[in-house]
Image 1 (cartoon, one colour):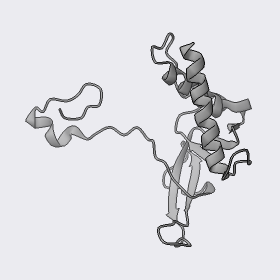
Image 2 (cartoon, one colour):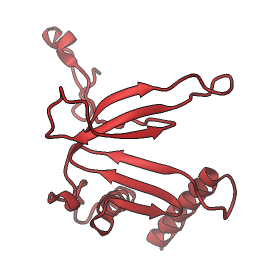
Image 3 (cartoon, helix red, strand yellow):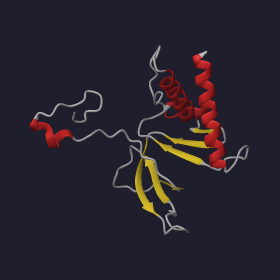
Length: 165
């Protein structure tokens, strides 16, 4: 029963996000997500982006990993539609250039960015690649804290986050 409730909550959240992106309930979404990962997905000959834990005690984490893998591997094309949101996965890739476009049309509004995406194996000196125009950038890159500044001070670190305690 808990799994059914979780699935219903997840579906409601996705529908709400799609409706928000579309500008109203039931309207087709115009939001396109370009997802760039260094790791290869199945479509590039690699493996699933997110490992799933068998018998995961956190069902939401497992559902999220499953959804992310499905989006990245959709029909071998890396392009999937999720409740009207278009997700375009570019695996084994890297951002080579990021350029902010001109001023926005109103106060506080950005005119967006031009992002150059190229294969990760391509030389970092080579800035050629596919140019993607976008309004927002979400950098969920998994950086870890730089503990070198307090390493010699023997500061106790959290085992999970590696941050000072």
